[in-house]
Length: 267
Length: 277
Image 1: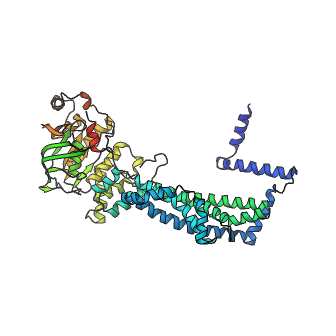
Image 2: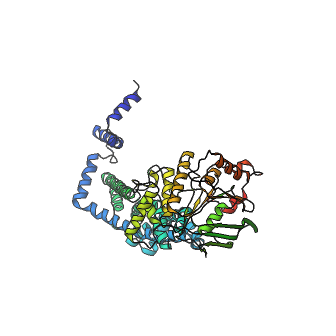
């Protein structure tokens, strides 16, 4: 009777798995409609078909792979360095009160500084090439891992450590059997954030240290030549990569932390 | 099978320093527990009964006096002293089987023997068929059974129980008390149970040690001397229960009616002490 009911009925005809596609589908349809109606001839409004064709061109010419692999490679290096150093620093801060008193205040001050504020310094030290970009990505990856590792180690219940003492666990046994699993959800959150930040930083680095190849440089190219279709294609690729990284981590988390019941998150 | 231990506590004193002032948590405790004996310790919060248990297990140190197991002064924790806490303290990332097996991480048994022992102890607490379940899939009573299996898997000389059923509902509690009694008889092991529940103490104990607070000390030891199985409503049982309860006379009744909430395990024991009635 009311329009709300009609809408609900329409929506319910879409299988649940596909419901997430409804909004993107609508936007695409409206976009297509506006372009097809010829209501605007602004160069800012390109047709979905033009974006698609640009994409096909980028893929077949191999330009996409050159740009994407350069970006992903830098991201992998930055993430690898930043997260492993972060894990070590986080573990040290979480394990030793002494280290926390010594390093903690410096760390907590540095983390307040916007990452972008480091760019001028990094470019003076490392130039505009890959080294500076990797260093920037590593910094972005570093902070979330340190914070979550610290948090994870702090949150290991004292009751569990007492159980370890009752069964005469060595330091290594306690770390491996009690501390690591108890801190794992938090460690994982850190890694997850760190990977997402690395991807954001990979793009940021290509913008701010604009030289060489990368998906960010593809976007800059598109802007400079006023190729709206290339810009839009670049945005779609960036989004897809982020989506893929998230899906990968979600699958990994499900496997590694299967013991954590969905509803009972206490441990 | 039975390698029950003799526990001798002589002239035990324990104090904490709070704001430069000494607080006597335990004062002049003398208690000898025979091999295979079941001793219940009751008392209101702050009487130091949990601290006493933590000293015997070796999680607390720094005391005056002597705690001897089979004539040996205890130092730190040891696999020949087992404990069941009020909270089950199982590791949520491990199955029942693996939780129990973790108790054997430092045992001298071969891998095959370990597997057999784990299986036996899961059977002992009546949890066959739940070996591969995770703690969150079990009820509160079942989790506490797993905790008992883990505590016994090393075949300790003495088992300490720190209000193990305090957080369970009345029906489950009564059932687990019977189960614990069966396990005690079957294993022939020395057990010390700390509880708020006078009925539980009388139901299970050969003796009931009544403690009083400020400073924590033993007020009286009541022998139970009733044959098993004990009938909770029988005249003799109620008479002993009443005589234990009379020891609390002069203290507000609220002392005994504490809800089975988690006592402030996380609080410093000194804080527990301070707010005790």
